[in-house]
Amino acid sequence: MEEKTLLNLFNPKLLEGKTVLITGGATGLGNAMANACASLGANIIIASRNIERLTTAAEEIEQKYSAKVLPVVCDVSKIEDVENLLLKAKEEFGSVDALINNAAGNFISPTENLSTNAFSKIIDIVLKGTINCSLTFGKDWIANNIHGSIINIITTYAFTGSSFVTPSAAAKGGVLALTRSLAVEWGKYGIRHNAIAPGPFPTKGALERLLPGDLAKQFDLKARVPLNRVGRHEELAGLVVYLLSGFADYINGEVICIDGGEWLQGAGQFNELSALPPEVWEQLKKQKPSK
Ligand code: HXC
Ligand code: NAP
Image (cartoon, rainbow, N blue to C red; front, side, top):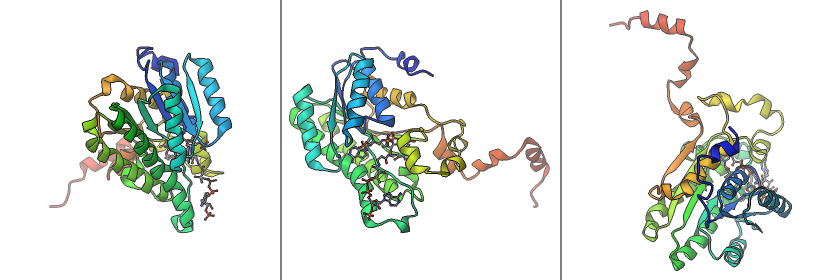
């Protein structure tokens, strides 16, 4: 499905007048979200560490759509950078309506091989970075009576945990708890919190870090998914657009998986039996349990 086809679902002015901030919006899934929101009329702020990637992405989006895009260099793990991000955003657009906490860091490793610094690095980007952004923008919204919306991008292993990506699993689990806690606490201010848990959506950032070298050849991402395919970026972007739209104003504190059923396939005790051929099922049917 083409990006355009999916976005034809929505009124082209759906997000007109809204300003959407996407951390990590210069690359991968964040970039798909930025493009989708810009195509529907939103002003966009993208924030991450690498200035070249930011300016290239901002230029590309502005060329494609008649949207305004503000690129801001910001390390979300540093509170002074995030406070500067709020100032820049307000200077350019007056206020921000939606924050998508999408920036992340990850690598694959046996946990016993990790230094405490390596563990902290991921916690600082994913959990502390999300807290820095949510508190900074949330406090501003509360002070100015702005009914903002926060979408936190987590993973399905935030529910289950996962070997070999322990820092990321711990951080994303924390982000899920933050989402649910603030959905209730800040509901009274009209601020909504939701989370999206994507399954496998190939991006350079995720694949190079999580399936480095020959691992990519050995690990068939789609084989783990009941729908037998990976996700398309525009499918995730479409979900983000829906959650930001007025149609989702009553959705608060929710986590939406978009993974083709992947995590449930791993969880159900008998799910592996789908590999059994029909003749084996016929034989099993004839076998009577002993009394
Ligand atoms: C073990 C490692 C390591 C590795 C780094 N370290 N890589 N340890 N295995 N593969 C250790 C270093 O030795 C160091 O510890 C500490 O981590 C910090 O390393 P730095 O090199 O200073 O960090 P930096 O270069 O800033 O890199 C940060 C990063 C990097 C997180 C490691 O990958 C990054 O910037 N990533 C951003 C993008 C990203 O990760 N995207 C993927 C998101 S995908 P010492 O003790 O030596 O100082 C995702 C998907 C999940 O989350 C679900 C998929 C299905
Ligand atoms: P990606 O392209 O590597 O995105 C990560 C982004 O975060 C990059 O733009 C990176 O930019 C930015 N970033 C990293 N550290 C930062 C920091 N300290 N401050 C500010 N920005 C920082 O990977 P992706 O696959 O699109 O991932 C996007 C989100 O989806 C992540 O939250 C990830 O956990 C989640 N996710 C992805 C998948 C998947 O299959 N792709 C599955 C589940 C969940 P800089 O390096 O330039 O700063």
